[in-house]
Image (tube, rainbow, N blue to C red):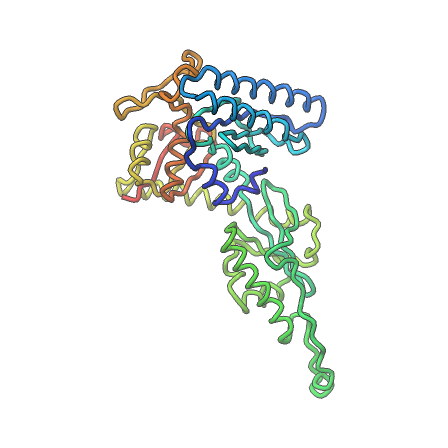
Length: 374
């Protein structure tokens, strides 16, 4: 699976608690074909072998679970297809299940045992790729395009592509009045764009993403007049002749609008943090954010993309653990291998917004900060 397949319901299913251990294997991959494919295959075998060694050494893993999860890891490895490689790979395995995810952002080489899968790399990838919709409106055809990480492909669902309904022209009326409707004149055009508007409303309700509109001035004006789709768009690009793409032309057409939107999103995040600090409703640093996450108080969690920490929870405090100096396999459930992921998942469970910023952006806040609800 790819991050474009990561819906809210899919993420919720991945974050569901499972009998220990839910095993996550992540490692960077090379997009190039050969010889990188061989390198990726070797790394995959090594990581699966490491996970199986951990299963054997972990005192908290039953014999039945050890065998079952080992088999799931092998099945997952066999399903990996090199043609889908991005910047990293994530494998999830638990009793009776496994999944393979191809990620468009780097992920560290790790084997993690917990009672949930390590989803932070998927969430970060989805955030970084910033999925969006592009709707191209023309008199004879309206198409929907799904964008992710700067790439676009046409989507054929939720009523798209859309075309005008067939109607017989009123020849007598046209001859009598001399009024021949243009491509966006008359009731036929209005019916057509009402259909488009209803389809977009349904789409955004099911899969909310930023919406960019592309079309000639008349097309966009009429769409705005007949419904709410145009009002829901984050930007409009006045450019005709692109209903059939190509994807490269559409990507270029919305590039500036997307860059401007990214700047607005970052400014929005920083402004909310400033407001939270002004209200003294802000928590910063690992332990402080961990505490408020458990209390369900986080409204918006902001984390640097590469920030991770291994800790031991002792008397309601976090004690840092150096994985290089400690055998995590022997410690079993005593150690949280990535407490940052635990915080992210807890925040998502309580309806918090999670935002990732580049490494170093939160240096003044110890790399993690939260705006609080109360």
